[in-house]
Amino acid sequence: MNTQDTQRLQEFLDKNPIITIIPHTNPDGDAIGSSLGLYLFLKAQNHNVKVITPTDFPDFLKWMPAADNILIYPNHEKEAQERIESSTLIFTLDFNNLLRAKPLTPFLEKATAPFVMIDHHQQPDTYATITYSNDKASSTCELVYHTIVSLASEQVIDEAIATCLYTGIMTDTGGFRYSLTSPTTHRIVATLLEKGANCTRISSEVLDSYSLDRLQLLGNVLRGLVYLPEYKTAYMSISSKELKQFNFRKGDTEGFVNYGLRIKEAELAAIFIENEEENVIKISFRSKTNLDVNALARTYFNGGGHINAAGGGTHTSLKDTIALFLKVLPEFLSSPNAYYKEL
Ligand code: 5GP
Ligand code: MN
Image (cartoon, rainbow, N blue to C red; front, side, top):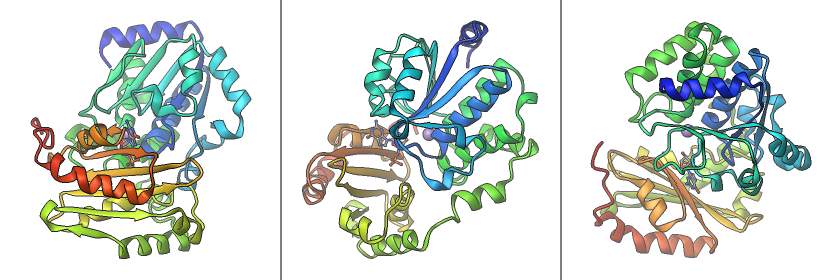
């Protein structure tokens, strides 16, 4: 965060605001980690602060420090709405467009508080009074680390904050593998380890915590994977019937899409997941090198994200969504937008 924005943020904080922190809908490790890391920092400074998630989050993140203090909107609708209404400072973390906070979007649009956006996705919207957006950062947790150091110092980072920030960096870098994993990322991670983050425990809680049903759902999905050598593309799909068969719980399909890229030649992986209740097909894309799945998701699937990890959705059937994907794929791959230039 630059000096001017740090000063402006400090001025807001000096007024003892009622602070609410909002991560994106279906929050992942980075969304929850950054929200809780910032929450714990502000709490330690005696601020009145609350995290509200637009939807519930997976069990493999529920062990995190202060996770019990999160207000999950669908479980506490009225309280969450009132809190947003009475807030005098709102942080939005790990997203840059209020539509990504569904079903909280209308309440956020009505809110009178100034917004502070901390995010690392491309093409940020302009709703925030302070926008700290850097699409070269590995994770929002990395940006929250810088925010805390700018506002206070490294010394205020305790074991709990370090654990939260480490979790988000680990998950958003795919275990320090993805292209935005930088020397700075590793330096921050080294500091977080020094502050007490336990890398073995964290990876075990997040990654080695499958239920048998979840592992078998993965087996089933992988058996149905389709690989298209001419497009170097792997795709998978999961129907709501399969989700029921394997007793789906929130977060169970997290990370499945990445398996498509395990094929040596594959450059693009997609997964299509039917959500019968919400009447949507949720799509995740992943890519290697500079193949820009953010462009793919934005252009054809109402979505967005990063160059190598993006998502979107449709309101048609699973079959029609896959048919649309297969139709637009050759067109997209031969378009000038397909490959990001600067990487
Ligand atoms: P995932 O595939 O894991 O849900 O998301 C991959 C990345 O794309 C994340 O950074 C996420 O924030 C972003 N993303 C996922 N779905 C959507 C969507 O529907 N719209 C937008 N704008 N971004 C999305
Ligand atoms: Mn993120």
